[in-house]
Image (cartoon, rainbow, N blue to C red; front, side, top):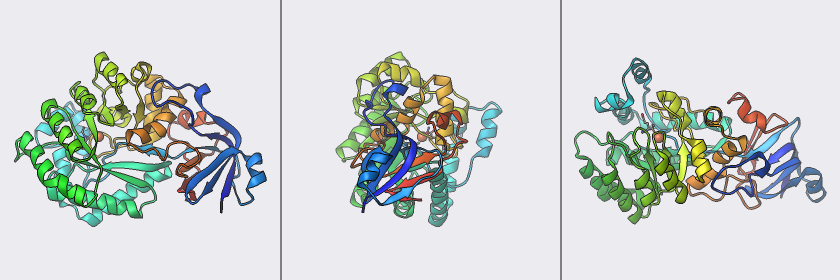
Length: 404
Ligand code: NIG
Ligand code: FE
């Protein structure tokens, strides 16, 4: 039976906005005194509450001023890990660089050994806890990368855990294989990537553990040449592609575009040519303000990317090293103040543009037929969401049409 939910002071549908380029307030469809009709986990109709009331008698009433909008999508996280890295944070703030710590066997390698030593029970418990924290802040879809196993066996174990937790969790977890995070010291880089392709891809495919492959393109991780070969092989094996590019050097954006990755993530260190190249392509740019804040580095040039005509998504990059905060709205609203982004641009980057970066087209907008994942904030005006810099939390969250 269809249920009418509302009334909401404002319903932000995010409908009718292009995938690429700047977005202004006037581009938003805002339904005042709106209602949302859901049935069988999907959206059936969105419109004026009073009009919908004439057709639908099953009502789930919402009291007080509320802004409704699509559930947030965090399209880039490293949410499954063991241990913690507060010592790295202190070391960086005492003058060491992220890359120095990494090349001395710390950083990511430190988390790798703690993750390998953690039980699956513990890893899954922590993953559930982190995703619960995310859901409470309005994030209903969470991409989760592996990358702290770095052996076939331990990477597969992480993928199995993500899939297991996804079935039980309230949010949708989208697994991504990041076996190519950094190279374990016992391998030559190209041999390690060959090993992933030959030995690990087949297991992922046979067990349907992930449909996406990521690689960290950087001199200290995997240089452009071999990264490009790996991405080509991942595509031949049927995977969707994404990559970490342009974080510390511009390396990687060309590789992303040439290989048609769905997104190129980070981009803090890119130049004008990279921006133009991305704008001409279908590859989405993903800004990760939490990593800029965690490392004390420049923000991704989000304003320039949008003005050039790119599709911009914003994600947390939540991980124990570069981005420990893991707060999507706080990070996005800080990025907005430094990069001069409108609320319309940021909310696009957290909803349908983030969905597109994941290759998902069933969420991120409030339109008939889409998944009924939506949230409401206790405010009469959507502008308050980013203005409060993360301190305005959603008061209601509907996942697949059900109030949580
Ligand atoms: O996206 N840059 C590579 N990977 C992560 C950091 C992982 C870590 O430091 O543990 C990132 O920033
Ligand atoms: Fe990352």
